[in-house]
Length: 164
Image 1 (spheres, rainbow, N blue to C red):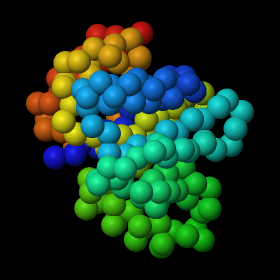
Image 2 (cartoon, rainbow, N blue to C red; image 1 turned 90 degrees about the vertical axis):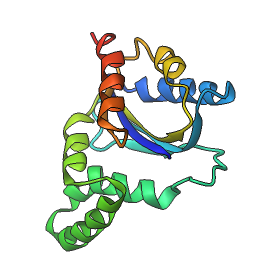
Image 3 (cartoon, rainbow, N blue to C red; image 1 turned 135 degrees about the vertical axis):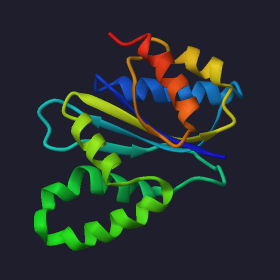
């Protein structure tokens, strides 16, 4: 079963660095990456830049419309105000079916701010210990995943040991 995770990094380049690590791990066959996207928010900018991962051929890829919808709800809809309020409500309701609820949107909106970045990834078949070791020292903060409670707690423990 695919796992959708969202990671926040305390620097603008953190998510890009993590993406490079993720792509290397995929080449080493330690994880399969179906889809993903990076959000970078340089200081002084009014909104973040988003980029979907490239060269993905996985059957489970979510596609640009999913990432566009998600990032629109998180970062851009608040800027549009009441004009799209009803439409935004309908769109966010449709995302609940895949585990993305209002709490997730609010958490990402609150934590991914100017000077930070985030990596969103849909993965499966990870060799957990090797993948976790590759990300040691990255100062990543797990924002959300659809892993079991036990798996998520274990993942948080790995990254808690490396946080500054």
